[in-house]
Image 1: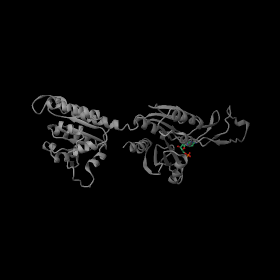
Image 2: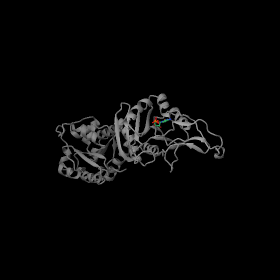
Image 3: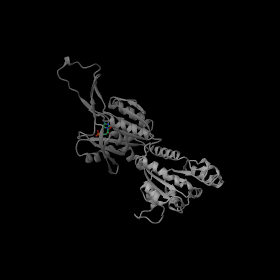
Length: 402
Ligand code: C5P
């Protein structure tokens, strides 16, 4: 899991192991993470603000009531941090956090922080074995905190036993693991995604189709899978490699409609994402045998309307189900998208401009606008379809999770 760009907040309490955190900051910085430190007054007996500021290239935080921006520091740092690690965590600070006390910036942050906190305790063996300390640790674990247990060995106070700060690599791995876990923001969700242009046969070997490559749908399926979802891709485009999610291959809009009804509606999936370019019309009749050119100089194919899968699903969806439509427009993108989200009744609509040569249909790139029901618009700048897929999922569901 790359730590690049991740925001790591380290809470340092007053124990001799505080000096080891200087090296940990270096490890995170080498991995291109952003690091901020919040310390207790006691921690400053062991490490200086200058050391921490030089290593983290950020101010060190400990003053609870003085902020430059006039924003409560504990709220600002909480929303900044992707992960909050308290290392070394003293018996005193563990006890305060376990009991909801907020007498300094570090404990206030711990109280306000909404995600899982990682504690790496370090203390004298007697303190570690103290029943009250162990009870506080059990309390924090029962509230969902993660602990990197201290190791046994020679302690700075001259005794041997458990209490030495865990190896820095173990603490580093715990941060990586938690970030990976947090990334699974679609865990427990069943998602059905449609992809590709449907093929509407007028004889057994010929069809009316469109240029949709199915790449956007496949990228969304892959990224939703990585975010922890149980994904089923219903596709009319052939996949070039074996995928890690369920795939159902269909040809026509009618087959796609039946598969969507079964997988999304009957099986009660949570989310439907309709990236497929479903043909609006199909030949009224499909010849049983290949049409011979020798038999006629002209061929007239009468087209009849296909069901609009997206609209039909929006009409019958259950209250717990969410639907995202896509729209490809060659003019007045936003205006048409606003009309379309209302008309179709979906929860979100992803709009892209297919008049551009460098994005859209068969390109590996895309640039999209995500509209919600209130017509709020988020622009996702041109990027690979994989990155666009991640950003679409994050912009819709990570926002909800926060
Ligand atoms: O109306 P328009 O084709 O622009 O709408 C595009 C959206 O509707 C896409 O999400 C597409 O998958 C879906 N659609 C559908 N059934 C159709 C036509 C489009 O579900 N017959």
